Image (cartoon, rainbow over all chains, first blue to last red):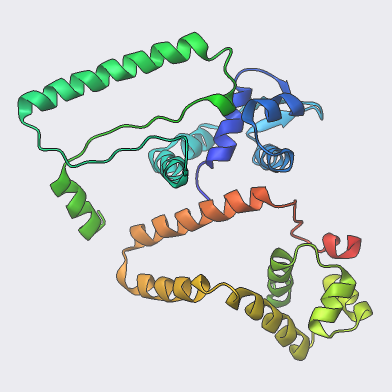
Length: 159
Length: 115
């Protein structure tokens, strides 16, 4: 598999710049202990994190090739789809709207400005609360816009 | 990886918690022989067929598998190389996520000895 799975990314993001013990990572991510252990082992084997047997931290000697592999566009796209699919399959506790909207150019500009505001709001909210809210309690938020004709063409032609 | 190793690995993935006794009961192969096979002794064709049969019976319990097989065959002749890569990547992601959810399964046959 190219890139990272969402589970792997969650663990890497939980560790961040710190050096955490297994229990701390498990509390942060909320993963079942068995899953958490398996993912950690896989990350150690891939050389993405290092451990002294007790603490885990992100390896500081990641090659540019490896960084490209885990943060490349294709890998990120696949990872986003994985997360979005998981959200869509949730029966409760999620909000999802997808609509085809008729929008003139003026309204489109207004909408884009609103998206920009939304992004600023989210950045601020994250800055304010990221130190206190563990990874498992954070929200997954996604938004976007595209053209129907381009999407249809993409679906038919596959490119 | 030889055909025998692949077959035993698939068996282990489908029946991760089977003990030697259970494998023996399921396949009809003697328990000491099962132990030897999981430790690298070369299989007879008949034994390979028995393992394949058990695997296929297990797989056929899931009706979506036949549908997936048909879809893959069709896709291989219709989709572009890039699209096939995306489908493969999607399936691999599903497998990775599920593998993390299982108990750690060794790719060698130590687990059989422990069992």
